[in-house]
Length: 247
Length: 338
Ligand SMILES: Nc1ncnc2c1ncn2[C@@H]1O[C@H](COP(=O)(O)OP(=O)(O)OP(=O)(O)O)[C@@H](O)[C@H]1O
Ligand SMILES: [Mg+2]
Picture 1 (tube, rainbow over the protein chains, first blue to last red):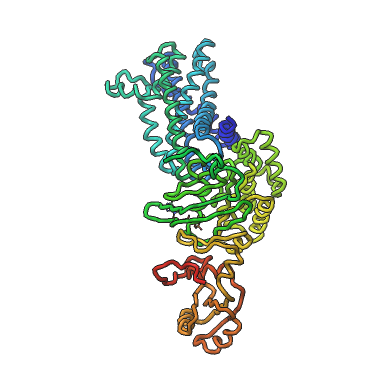
Picture 2 (picture 1 turned 135 degrees about the horizontal axis):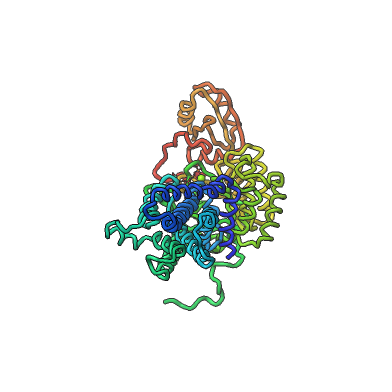
């Protein structure tokens, strides 16, 4: 337990002292808001308020996904500069390291997402307190899933030049398949079938359901799928950290 | 026929406050085609300061990494503080501190936070980690830079912080891999002063270096080259092994001088500093050699054998510049000729 806290505390302290990164994660949501705004302008067809409800959870998903993968990127960076070695050689259970990294990545990703959330009253989404709580809970689950995805991938990489390439190659399809910014209604059936395997789709749907009250997947299914992703990916990351053939 | 466990020895040879800190048995390491370690056997006793001395690429970091649980050997096994470095690495890790060859501090965090957080990683309570960090900041003279970002320290200060970090959990065994690389003489002296203090309080130190003066204060030294230990002994015994004194001649043409000496039945070695001759009584042969040597001698010097001379004698290469051409050797290794 102490090891787990140490892993998380280390990462949060680093975020805190890295003022540039901290400022970026506070300002970045405004950028997404801009995306949101232009989306709104272009889609008067769908009706302003309706599309806002549709796209806001998508933008949350976008922000969570990219921030948590960026946080995971720091693992690769740590490995490259040799700092990860000092961490991995500490007598901390490997599962604590993996879980700590997943949790700290999720926390780091929730910083900009929370800023976005503060805009809810301004945007006039008109959420009831219950819906709001539901949204926060689903954001947490989404953040954990994306972070676990990032950590399980990053744990395997040694080079900070290769990881972003692979990262983007995985990230973009996951994101576009998720229906975060536009519905997949008109997409070919095979594409929609593929979306069933996309954790981002479940996460976005869960957040969207909290906002609009309608779900594409049964929420229980989404929660199970996402939890399974978190568990399996954390386990995979644990295995990589435990292999220890060459720290 | 597997019998019951020996009741006399319920713990086997593991655990217990044995005399042995490190034990390696026929360790091999291959990186693809590179055979970096070729059968390493060694024993380091508790409380010993043990130096692994060898040139670049000798296999020091590889051996170091295996003993410090960072790397798996291809063959053979090692035990550290009674525990297997592969199967029981968690047990080993609890009790060792490591200073890596490459820096491993979080540059953006303060020195104090670096130490404090590492304390937490070693399962100290928050309060204990704070107290221990303050203690180390004090004893290592780092109080003035405690609040500074680690990346803004001088090289020497950084290495001292790394030493402090390695000591945070009060380890029984300290691993130092070329820990003073790139430091000036003063900073090196200061660093080794601290390491020696740790050793004098009963800690075991395993260090690697390619500076012979850093190996000199060690209790025992293993000379390593091309993945093999060439000699392992106390510094004095290593020097005695060379048998006699050293005559060093800096001449206008070292190769020719060496060839001439060879004809005369000597066994010269050409190093970076000149032609090296190991003889029982250098002073007795010096006049004759000087008088008859067919090339001009710039400088002649007689000294007690240094570790450098031992290394040159064993390998035909100088220790501190790996560039010198290797001596042509017979099929067998150099062994302990003397
Ligand atoms: N990861 C690796 N992959 C392939 N070869 C390696 C690797 N690490 C080391 N080697 C090779 O193994 C040999 C021993 O390397 P090692 O780093 O142990 O030497 P060293 O004695 O520590 O040298 P130095 O004084 O330069 O640090 C060298 O030939 C090196 O090129
Ligand atoms: Mg090395």
